[in-house]
Image (cartoon, rainbow over all chains, first blue to last red; front, side, top):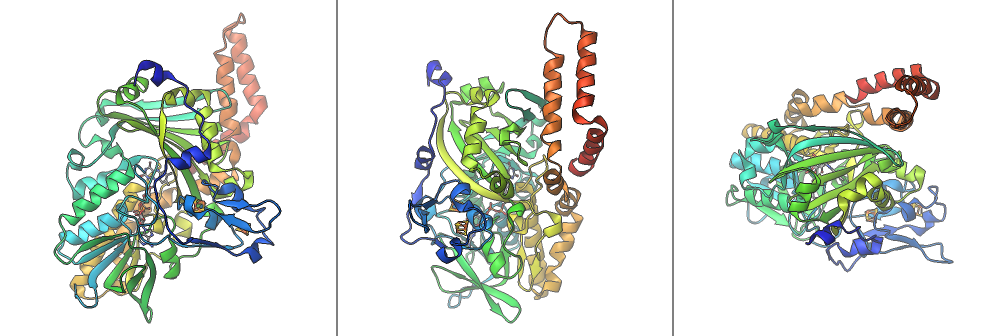
Length: 104
Length: 438
Ligand SMILES: Cc1cc2nc3c(=O)[nH]c(=O)nc-3n(C[C@H](O)[C@H](O)[C@H](O)COP(=O)(O)OP(=O)(O)OC[C@H]3O[C@@H](n4cnc5c(N)ncnc54)[C@H](O)[C@@H]3O)c2cc1C
Ligand code: SF4
Ligand code: SF4
């Protein structure tokens, strides 16, 4: 790296950019299941949508059901703890599958 | 090992530092050990801030740093308080930490370190011991009250006289085994991190280091939007570990995403110039248990012991120690299993020797000493916010150059401080903080 490069302002990264740096061994099946009946009466102002560091949970326009992009999950377990309504059935992905950190 | 039924002396669930220390200890005594790790290899699911405390490791593997993939030896610890536009910091830097055993403080990248530690452990295994990578343990097998094995998602059941549960912060198996309940949002912290690549010469110049020396910087206050928690920058050989960690209950109350907090931290004027030119090569997230001594789970039951993060052994005060407690508890559980095997008795009574060992060690003493730290900071947010922010502004005013005499400035600053923060209450709170946090 030359001096100019080293002094460059870092590029602002979107979350998508960041997730692009993560290596995954894609699993076929989701390790996260959400009970949408419970979600209808969510008492946490849908905290799953906000708190997930990988934005795995999304509410599609006009829908009440939470969509789960489980492929992006970093397996931190935060959503399960934050959803105090216990709507999230979170399991470890199948052995060897899911996130695979190269640095950690 | 019994070929037909896959039976071991001990099964360790999880190939992190706590599990691997348990396995290493038992393997040294010639036991048949199975380590079951859900990642492609041990370390592939793991991250932490970045400082590995190695008093225990150095006893198991003397001078491990000569062969282990450590990044840098930490000679400098810096604590930095950020307000919107200012920084107040103390730095301890000493040559005393720059020679073996390097104050037992090294930066590491877990994916590399855990993998090395696993291979090192395998190298002392007998022919009946294995590391099973890519196997997720999904349940325990019970016989009456006793736990006698585990179910994985690959092979059939695996049996052992004792299970050491070393599955980390997200401890679903310990919940299934009935040793703990699902944690509440105020019991857990979530951290997000970026590894940011930079050439080592630039890191050395930027942080005033030479060779393999490293620095660990902890940030508070505005660094994490005034929440209970902190941010960090640790130097690796050719990268920086940059991240934030805060209580899940705080993220919930502020309704804020952890990655947003990290991005704001990276934009702070005192931070962004440290990251110049860097390229993010990995993003990651993980939980840290913060429930502390008063909410410890059942550490022992018939045929099972909990170690490391699954037990909640983290000192979340300014010491930020998890790895050392994890390793110590792993060794003590391993030693207990060895004695249980000699006695041929793996009942909760015999295994409770593990608890005695913990009580006599720094693990429980520190857990006990800092038992109120997290609760105190949540109940007294002024200690991490209003007071230091006022102090920093007072110092800014104090050192602001003007045509006024120093006597006038001093009078104003001290007067302002007394008016501003209700001085007596601040002294009272800070005295309490000292007792709880130090
Ligand atoms: C953001 C962050 C910063 C931190 N900073 C520091 C620091 O600077 N210094 C420090 O000392 N500590 C730090 N810690 C704490 C430290 O990381 C932990 O205390 C330590 O890793 C605990 O070790 P462990 O072996 O108990 O658990 P882990 O390291 O989490 O290991 C658990 C292992 O079990 C495996 N596993 C889990 N479930 C299963 C299953 N069902 N089947 C099979 N395998 C399973 C996992 O894949 C993993 O390999 C930090 C933590 C975080 C999250
Ligand atoms: S998963 Fe939990 S937090 Fe998310 S909408 Fe459903 S109930 Fe609410
Ligand atoms: S485990 Fe973490 S990354 Fe995965 S969905 Fe839950 S909060 Fe998001």
